[in-house]
Length: 348
Ligand code: IPM
Ligand code: MN
Image (cartoon, rainbow, N blue to C red; front, side, top):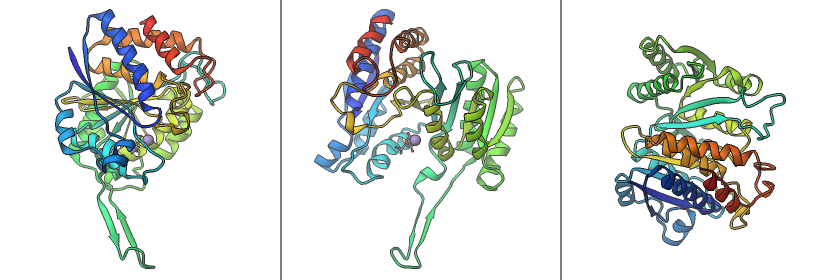
């Protein structure tokens, strides 16, 4: 029996989470697993009502669950930064979810904007460090709102934080057993301190993995290769900020936000899974949003819980349903949100 914390969040978050849960329940009954859910109200709506983002008491409670399923956080009436830092980043940091795992996989019958690229060309995984870098919120203003204003935003890399991420990436590449190739994506030619640490750590840890081929690409070049030769990549490991950017590019080449999922992992603690598309306010409550990303997030959750067979069954069913869809874009799928959820659940 697994205890799952559910944070449906804002906009279309609750709609897609509902379908994800539907599929989890279908997998549970097929594979003799049991899920118990507890819903949490956090998000933009809750913030507007109460002034509360993600309180410390909630973090302590979340710690006691086996996994967290997140819909989307984001509200058009809340100033940028409040919900992101107060909820999403707070959860990632305080639960020490130090890996952001983002598979970039083009499924058959999904349209990619890359001409002449096929499912066999686009199948790699980004391992993004998730607790350091420009994301730590360190810095400040000097002489704010004067002509002499100074703004500092600090990029931090620690040996401990980088090494545990790089080590995870090597282990993951080995376990994935596809190309057995790990590419470090950084900017060692300019970020001569932080990324020197990344480079040295990568080289050192690599010695322990003689079966894994290593490669390096600067982040700007990485974006070129992702478009021109995505088939070169197997697993990419990268710092937080670059990972944020390249995984949105990754989401697009795999068919868009309707399908892209990610996991915020604490391999020794509690992890959090989410469709990465955001709250899509304009589609709220229209039953037109694509729940596939949330379904893939649920699949990743099953995998992280050690339910590999259930995860594989969900993926197979999702692939089958994708084969019947007209498009992965909201409103153009040929089915409603709930129909897609029903179909995937039925096929598990
Ligand atoms: C993501 C998002 C977040 C990030 C935002 C919402 C803080 O873009 O999960 O990639 O930058 O990490
Ligand atoms: Mn992002």
